[in-house]
Length: 438
Ligand SMILES: Cc1ncc(COP(=O)(O)O)c(C=O)c1O
Image (cartoon, rainbow, N blue to C red; front, top):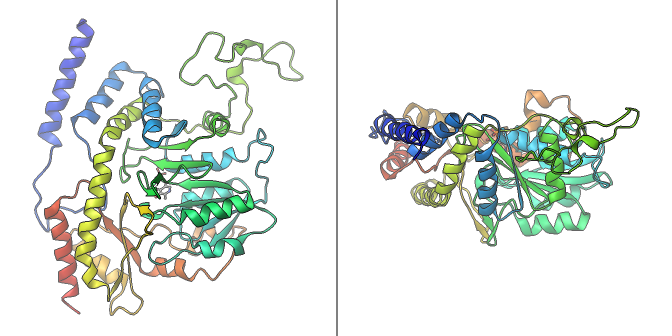
């Protein structure tokens, strides 16, 4: 072993010891330790990978990022994974890709994109940011996904695409969605930021549409701190997405930089009106951004992928445990349901306080929070009621009554792999203490 490698190994051994002393499992004290709605679950490997990446000091996306793309691509069974610095960036990238002049059937300003009104904001925002018009459909109580029954009503001559998230991991009705997008020849972007590992009829969600997106923020199925990805089986879209992610530059050398570029004519590109040639690395064929990740992020993500099957199993187990315990309160709560074809890799456990319940959602979530059980709302609720959206141009196809009900009554609690039986029992016990009052 070289001196350098010996030194690296000794540093990594110390990192493992640091992990053991500072980050390994702490005892759970009911009522004192917070039961989080989500959180990063890691061991010494993630820390060692990140430190190793820092020792390499590559910094920008490099060898770890390349491995991450390949490994996640294998897990998803897709040809292309394009890492980004967040799930929001991934959504922006996916929609912006559809505006590329390289696509003969590209989206044009004013074209319409169907999206549920009960969404995460950055599932909707890229529609607006790309001068497209969102057309809002309602959701269904129970699975909290877009209501397929409203899709036909949403169609106009300008309808070009559909984007939606599989809500908190629960797959939307993909039979209905795919029949609809095929009938109207629409682009489909699946936001699977909360649904990594969920399946519909045995097939991973995210592999049905043209492109799909992921988030690697710590609340999600795997994390790299901040991060995300676009994935697709369509190399043409992937190439455009990489260009948009990387400042809009046309060069597609990726992680390898042969002297004369992968194209072989890096220094012989021509730009009309400019005498001579222009370096392909400074040749811009898209209006782009910089949405790239760094190598230490990818190093962490790489270690997380190994844990993903275990994470998915734990999320399913925790969900089932909570469901069995909460079922008795259906008089007060609307619990989630899922389709017989859905195999759900739950992001969280959603529920709604019924309008007829003798308490408000706020009473229940405040009680839970006071007793250290973390809760979160289902994102924006009916996004049209949020202040930022008061001046947007849009269409809506119904009164969005369910989106309003989600905004009034829905919230979620955690199912993430960091929750063990004592914590789950404590959560159920806290619900029991709340419901004793009624
Ligand atoms: C459905 C959905 N889409 C997009 C995002 C955005 O991801 P990020 O926080 O990585 O930007 C989130 C974030 O939680 C999300 O839940």
